[in-house]
Image (cartoon, rainbow, N blue to C red; front, top):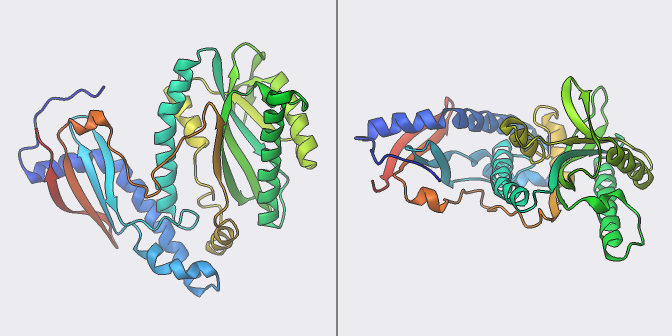
Length: 336
């Protein structure tokens, strides 16, 4: 429950300063995302891609943002914005989508943990071999994952297909695509959060990429063998425990599993346009089992929780120019 005193900012100038203080880091992220999108536009304008028809909408995306700042609890929500919703081409809309998925998933995650104290969360990464054909690699990755989930469903319903995934109570998946390190080949992988019964698999500490991780080796080894048999080209599956006692690791894992589908900074503008065209309308996120039904507002506008609706607020309008996001006006005060 949010705690607050009821003292309002005495004037619009102070309200703006308080609001900008709360928004400082968020505005930096939005400005960086907006600038990254603008860098793609010249290549989009010069391309023959059918996505070129969205040029103006993408160019104008995020030229204004309206934040409702609940200043007594330092919480902000985007209540209005002109957003293009072209997530694969627009970094700002990709950022909004990722943030909203995280925001929607956290209460679901916490409720599953609360309702099922015998379950433990794990972060799982599935990969397939790099290849020159992006769409073929995407279809191979997601088709292999779908087969794994189908095997789980079949095993649970009639036991005809033995799979270690039968122990998974639920999970999410997010596809991420980038260019493989040291190559011009497409690298596709899936980040997933799953829930496993606690104590069913022994967990051992290991160092991976200079990080301490806790790995359920029997589960991971079985899943690697199964993934190799399904894909016929990759056994690489990484499974590591999410330490729920650590806010940093818990939130970090959730963000890792809900980040951009196209890796920022890894693709040239031309590669980004190509990938967006090939993956247009493709399913990049899904959930099943105890995590099924995590939905976001497709308008990418925040909802206001009941607890926040009772608090005083100020609405701040920001517009984008060649200097970045600047405060245009203070438009409204909530009751206090």
